Amino acid sequence: MENDNQENCKYMGRAFDDMSVNDDSSAFSDCNSDRSGEFTSTSSERRRLLIACATEDSEDVIRQLISDLGSCSIDDRKQAAMEIRLLAKNKPENRLKIAKAGAVKPLISLISSPDPQLQENGVTAILNLSLCDENKELITSSGAIKPLVWALKTGTLTTKENAACAIFRLSQVEENKTVIGRSGAIPPLVGLLETGGFRAKKDASTALYSLCSVKENKIKAVESGIMKPLVELMVDLGSNMVDKAAFILSLLVSLPEARKALVEETGIPVLVEIIEDGTRKQKEIAVGILLALCEDNLVYRAMVAREGAIPPLVSLSESGTSRAKQKAQALTELLRQPRGVNPASGRASDVSV
Image 1 (spheres, one colour):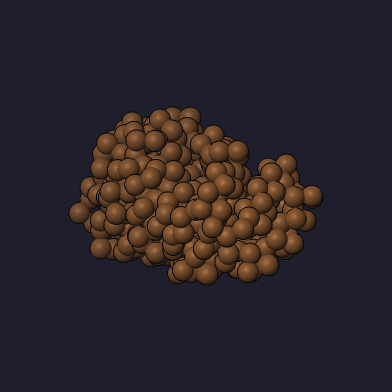
Image 2 (tube, rainbow, N blue to C red):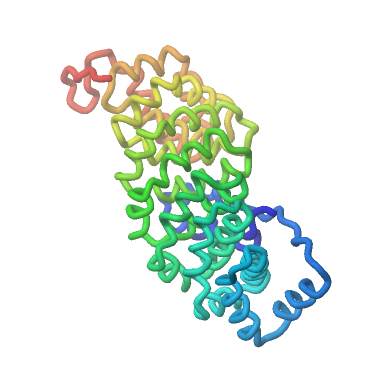
């Protein structure tokens, strides 16, 4: 049982495009694709589910399933949560019906269950309901954020992936971003980015990119050690994670502590390599990060120059995208300035690390 939201991939990409600067979020548009199969069930259960999915009037079935969520039998609760999960996955119009019928709070209560399957079905049902924008406020006000963070820390890998996706969906509401960060979501998302499989890394990076548009969450991410996995992900140019890691880094590099952590994690040679061998978009992101790193720091300029950055920068200034050309030219000028001179003022610059 895997992520249940393939049909919304394009929508998710558009949401990122809306909130990002210069459409830098396009790298996230393919994340969270669905690899799931259907659940094994008896013939009568499968018939019940198919009828519910096919009929225009599934309210009676939905009400019965919600009632079953409160059953004393854990098997009944699992079955009900599973069917709600699938109803919300397979028919978008059911998402609003299920939420309006009162399913959100009992589903949230399942997320704290010690039973792994019950927790997974609860998390994934909430994720599928959150794909309906009208449900996001209800899910948040019903107290979903802290249980989802708990699932990020304690669940199975699939549960963690789907919790990360649900947190992303809720973070699309701007006022939720700080609440999510203060609920402790950043450290487990960083952990998933570092130790999870490819799917987990994609889901965690999606959520982190959204959350790190808020300064408070940027600080939490750096303090949680995000720079190490970001640099590691950028090393492998064929991993399909380079763009995602670089875009997150481009959000963080405005913080002095992020720039310091980037240098400490040997990020400079990795970024220079991307300028040499990356795609056009990757080169553009990398040169922007290095420019931000070097603008006010002579030590970092010297480190970048020592890595042999000037030749590929000159090449990029001639053949890159329009933005890459501008940034490459600006960075080349910085690196060629005599040490101790601020190019903007002509006076000696402060050296800080």
